[in-house]
Image 1 (cartoon, rainbow, N blue to C red):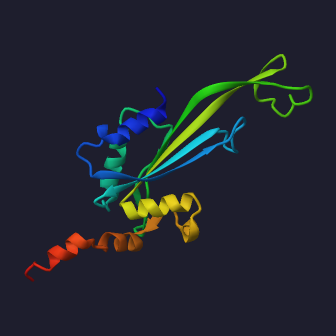
Image 2 (cartoon, helix red, strand yellow):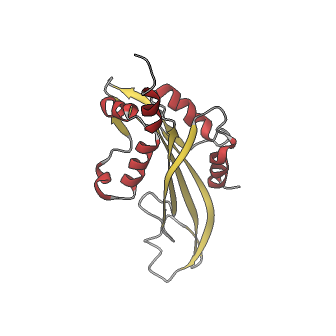
Image 3 (cartoon, rainbow, N blue to C red):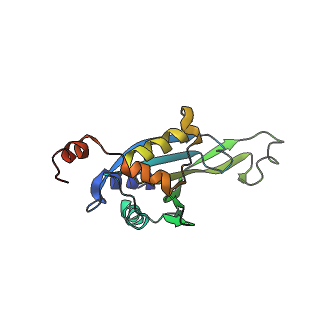
Length: 189
């Protein structure tokens, strides 16, 4: 079973017990055949997740991220952490996998350009690679901004998908929805 399929199953709720509701803000997919992009991947999938209700503590966010797909070993990851007491670095992980192979018939003279590939006569065999990245954000609004930044949507292209100042994070944490506002009308001071 592919890692992407395992991730999709985990995100449907099988691995999220005890965690806040995880919202998928969006997916950005890119396919470049046959050679792939500059990083060598023919298929890339970026998944942007946010917590609902919001979770604003790095340690708790790290625990949630670790529980997203516990049965799948990531190729690499970056943990949530506070940097210099001023910023929070968002956590992410990615999973690389071979999703198939392609055989290409080549003409003479093309071999030098594709010298890294295995050759069998005039047929070149190459692996097709996929990288799936999962980004977790403290809340749904931040996850949506990060997703819109990734797909190049309007002013969101300037949004830093990897870190945020604690001051900015605090403004997201303090934005009340209608329910907290409504409840506050009946609180005694």
